[in-house]
Image 1 (tube, rainbow, N blue to C red):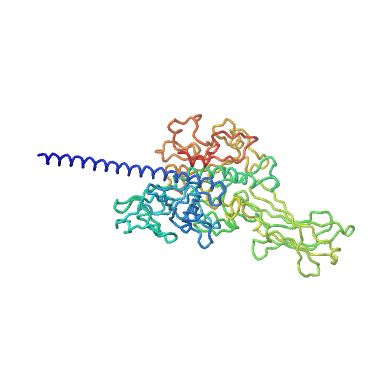
Image 2: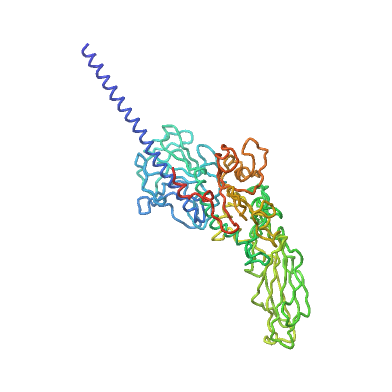
Length: 615
């Protein structure tokens, strides 16, 4: 009996000790996971903040850093994103250790004292600075995650690898006896991360206990976009808005008042693309709200997949044959003149004979040629005189080779139908000084290619190319007013009036109409991100800027462009409180306004750094 009693006591003591140890182990596991979660969250905030800060100036706004280079481990370069390399290898490795120094962090390790690992989606990071990405509100990740095919929401993973384990073969997991004694650069990621394929690339964020002990945090498009869109809005205000104000001004075009610039017509709202059946971004007369008229006439090939490419003469053409050449000084005379097309209807030439003023042969003779081009204000145009587009030649009347006459000068006049008249010419050589005979010959030559695209459309422009290259124009709504387009040249400049022909646009429920032009950066769709691109404006801008019924069940209600735009829902509107508290991510950029304008607090974009690092 005594022995049985002692045995019972021993069993109870053993059970108590065992239970205590198991409870302690269970608590330790919980502490491990909690610690890892905090470290992973810290790394995620730093990654978003790094992206947002760099988006303010980067050539590839929105990009993420590369993983740490494998051969940097154990060197002074440890913790630094893989460096820039030759153009032949522009892309990052799919997976590597987290570049903690690049992100401004201390070396973060998990509960097993292992440094964090990091995987980044193709199309979101680069090693080579000369290679360009295209990231905007409609971008997606290109990794397979937990069997979900790309494209999907995930653009990066941050991984706490935990202790080494003997990975058992399982669905999505290859058998691997993990060993971590091999130094870089022979380090095998499979010795740290379970259940992934770096080629596809494909990753798992969960797995069976015998095959998986990684702790993973996802970085999604939804995580990145608020910070990125805030940074882009500030950059558009700083760089794109001034460029739009400078496209058509009195310093470039006669006929435009000095007090205000002119703005192109909007392209009617349609599916902004990319993909087939999208808008051609062609501005239309009497259209003041819609897409930015980002049609392209140079450096592109028209196709069903690129409908905004409208090379000459699809959009810009001669309104009529240029000419004839005229003399603009009182001296001398033009004795004969012939104008003709040179090989095609793209190049027009006027040739003639001229003679000096016999009583005063030193008087200069200037000749000019005028050409009118239609549809100029239906997009963002500029003049390209970098080559042979405008030329003047002269030679002795006995023949011989033509000699170029310089300088060739030109003026442009904007017309109320949206066309532009270009006049160019030069002072012809003095016949006596040249030692020629009594007469001489001249020739003026103009190529239609003199009409080019503005720098805003040039993907290679060092200052502005990021906007068109990353296709932010596809998610940008543009609004101007009749009185700031070509049709109102004689009275250019809107006023505070409710008359649609006179009135400016209002902003943030202001009682004053004083906005001449603005942009609404639509941001990522709040309700239908996978359904874009489409032609439904309600999937781009919120009802406060779209004037449609806030009841989302009323799918037949149209989105009517309005004259009051808001930075965010405001209590001063007459909408129900439920609508005011609805999701909202429109960002309004004011381009031009009457007089001085104190931008209301609602128009100030949240700092991307503050937005990225807040809890």
